[in-house]
Length: 119
Image 1: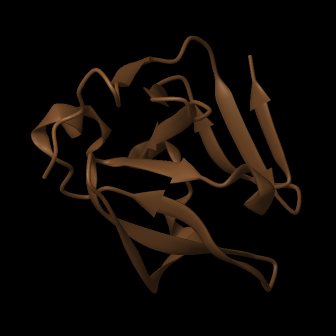
Image 2: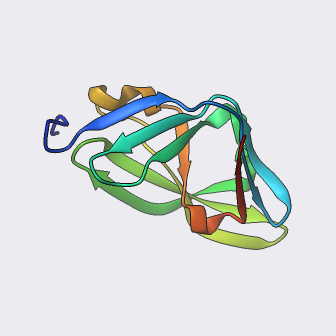
């Protein structure tokens, strides 16, 4: 494990407003409780509470990855109306203490959903 430092900062803050995501016209996320994770020079990522996602549309995939700053990520496919979007979602189910706020949250690849609305 590596703790984020001055050369690799990670900031987590509440995201103001509502976030909705859809696949094939079906809402898969509707939340006012998203977290915004800003990491080093990467684009910010929204982390969505699991309770605000239609988790019945997700199936755990076999893919995993490891981030030296956040921990091991698990991946999920999204299936809507017979169409599967593989590895569309990831989650740090047991994140490192420095980013423990994202436990119980999901992140989505923007190109794996059809629409992301922020309001």
